[in-house]
Length: 506
Image (tube, rainbow, N blue to C red; front, side, top):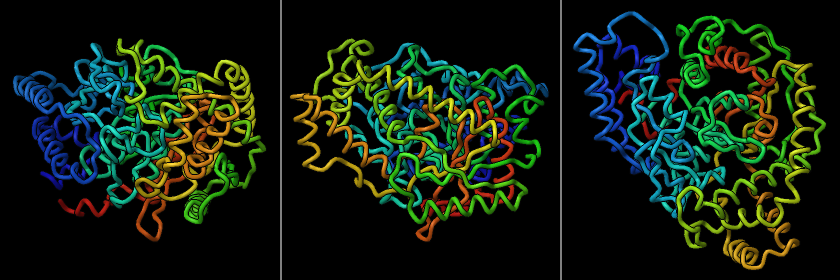
C-alpha cells in the first residue's frame, strides 16, 4: 500500500476510500508511518495529534461500513473524505491544538475554535493529524525557528525548504501527504513550492476566508496549500472559496477549469529581478526554459519590463510587514493574555516589531498609497497581457543557516531595540531587507497587488535542486492560471519526481 499511497494525489486517495479499495484508517496509518520515518531527517512536523485523527478515521470507516455516504453523490462536502492532512502552525487555528507559530511566546497558546479555513478543510473530509513548522510568526522566507530547529529540504538536507510554509512543503515533497495547508503573506506558498518541486498557488486577495478575524496591514496574506498535483490545489480552492455546494469539476469551478483546454495566451516575460538585485544563472535558466515550453505550447511570449519603482515597492512592503510584526509581537497579549517579553522572541522578529513601532504610524499611509499605485500599474499591464511570467526566487534553495543574522547583525538588532533612534532603525531595515530580498525578492509584488500567482515546478538545476517559475494574472483569474498549470503539468510532468529521501518505489 505504501507505493500505492505515493502514486496518488489527494483526489486519488479520496477515490480509494470512496471505492473501498482503502480505508481512511489505512491511509492515516501510512501517513503517520511516513512521518515517523522521514521527519527525524526533515523536521517538518512540530505537533502530532495522532490519537484524535485515528479516532476520526475509524469513525468514518465505521459509518461507511454501516451504509452512510454510499451514494454516488460527488458533492464537495466530503470530496476529500479520509485523506490525511497537515495544517501550518501559523494563524490557522485548530480548536484544542497548540498554535506556537514558531515562537516561544505563543508555544502554550491553545485556540478554542477552528479558523474558517480549518473548518472548511474538515467539512471536506480532510483528516488533520499534525501541524507543520514555520519561521517564527512567518517572518522569514526560510524555516529555521529557534523553538523547533531548522526544517530541511528533502531534495538536499543541507538546504532550506523555503518559508514560511517550509514544513508543509517539506512534508509534501517527502511523501507524507500529497497536499498540505500553507499561507502566503510575502511568498510563503510560492517560495517553498519552488524550493521543494511542488505546485503552489496564492489565490486572489479575499478569495479564501481569513485565518484570523482581523485584517493585517495591507491585507497581504491568504491561505491555501502546496500540492503535488494541480488538480488537488484546484479542488481545495473550490472547497475553501465557496464552491462546496457545486458538483466536483462542474463548469465554473476551479477543478473544472483545471480540466479545460488552455487557449493560447499572451504572456509577458518579465525580465526584472523585482526586489532582488539580480537573478542567478539557475533562475534565468528556469525562466528561459519555461518561456520556451510555453511558446512550444502555442502561447505568445513577449519580454517586458514592468516599469515599476522597486525601491518604492520595497519600502511599502516593509512598512506593511513591520506594522504586522508589531501587532503580533508587541501586542501579543491581545491573543495570549500574557505580556510579551524580549527573551520569548527571536532577535530579528523583535527588531522588526520595533521597526513597526518606530516607523509604522507615519509610514503606513504612504505605504498604502504606494500599494494602490502598484496595483493600478499591474492591473493596467494585465489588461494587455493574459499572464506574467517571472522568477519565483532569485536563486536555487539556499543552505540552512545561510541567511541567519551574523553576530554583528544581532548586536545591531539588540542595540536598535534598546535605543530605537530613527536613523539606526532605517539602517537596520535596509541592511536586513537587502539580505532577504537578495534571494526572496520576487514574490512580494503580488501580495501587494492582491493578484493570484503560482509557482510551477518545471526545472531542476545541475545539483538536482528544484527551481520554480512564477506566473501571475489579473485579480480573480485563478481559472486562467489553473488551465495553464495543468497544460504545463501535462507537457512536463513532475508528479513522479521524487527527492533522494524517497525511493521511486517505497
